[in-house]
Image (cartoon, rainbow, N blue to C red):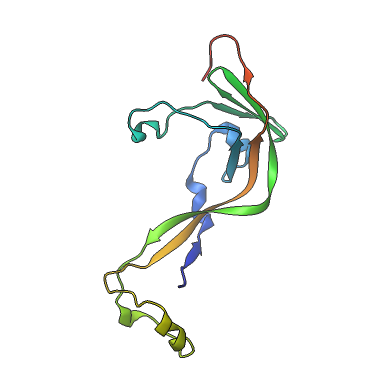
Length: 151
């Protein structure tokens, strides 16, 4: 089975990032690595979408980062990934009939061993939304902050 993947990364620049992340990069997606779990209170799963969890700050040299969540302060560092990661989005195409598919003569033997897709089956593809080249690693335990939290 061949699954098409399209790289249209030029369109990913329409997202506007907060000023703290814009210092890391204007249109780059950055991976955030935390130790443990980050829990958000909610009744319905849709309530946690877009909810403010904390404040992320990045220094002027883009070397260290701080994340303040409630009464906790996490300190981390910005590091490059050994291998870049791709963020993929599933795209379901239009319905095609079996007659519309191109088949090579060499692949006819292999086609006999594979199941034939039905006419109601829709082809699936993937769009690469972004490439992740850097990550922010928060590897230390959080520092408790005394006083009123500035979420």
